[in-house]
View 1 (tube, rainbow, N blue to C red):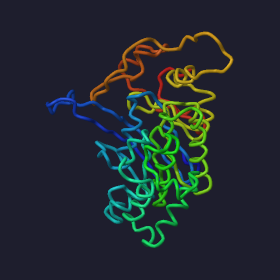
View 2 (view 1 turned 90 degrees about the vertical axis):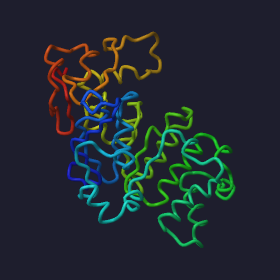
View 3 (view 1 turned 45 degrees about the vertical axis):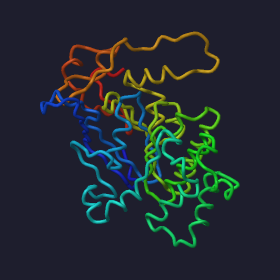
View 4 (view 1 turned 60 degrees about the vertical axis):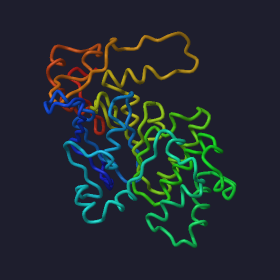
Amino acid sequence: MNNGQEVILSVKNLVKDFRVGTSKKKDAYMRAVNDVSFDLCKGEALAIVGESGSGKSTGARVLTRIYDATDGQIEFKGQPIDDYIEENGTLEYARQVQMIFQDPFGSLNPVHTIHHHIARPLQIHNRVGTEHIDQLVYQLLELVGLTPVVETAEKYPHELSGGQRQRVAIARAIAVDPEVILADEPISMLDVSVRLGILNLMADLKDKHGISFMYITHDIATARYFAEKTAVMYVGHMVEWGNSDKVTQTPKHPYTQLLLSAVPEPGRGGRRELGAKKGEIPLWKPDSQGCPFAARCPRAVEKCQGDFPGITQLAEDHFIRCHNPQ
């Protein structure tokens, strides 16, 4: 999937299990992420799309080392992540791989000013001398469109709107000059009127500053707008992935088609019938079998119940896991 570009972050066969009981047997664990692989290249965006519980945020938290991986390989700048951290230190990896959280208010400390939130990572990572911190804080606020900068720096999080707080979170993330930003649904809690501004800001950081983004979202429409590549996840599995235009314009997996059919179309009245059976989202376990979407899939065949589908390449940059692609 890298088309000869420089790969910054490479994930191969990533697995993450969580204990859901006291027993050590396999059925006491749930598998939140299963056999996930992708490459994130320099200066590009990869959108991870899926509904709640699909493993999107869990995967990001494994990449930031909030969670440890159960299995699989993660490479950063061509090195296994453990080797990179052993050689460069945990703090340096944290500087290079930053995260923007979904709730812009919850990720900011209400008792500290905006200046403190942006200055603190500069101090922790020794980015500039003490005498230059104010100047850089103001530059970062201007970069993310929060002006007048001096007045904004003196405010507290509750004095800003949701969109402004998210811009502060972005400024804090880019303050340490990262290579990668993991944006966990950065616009889902914002008003529709300000979402485009945040997406355009991230696009400028990607295109003009070469920052790579992993953009986690449940909105497949914004995935195509912002990201060059899209991976659709369901119950911890990547079910369709590749070039964003191909995935969103010519979707082949029934779950991707379901997501797209749920996108509102202006000017189209009436209710639309979604192309999926009603059913519960399964709790996937290490010993679960078959296709995770089989119970809801309108095209499921007997093989789907017992065999996990392998990878099928549909085009140069378009892949799917399905026994019966349309």
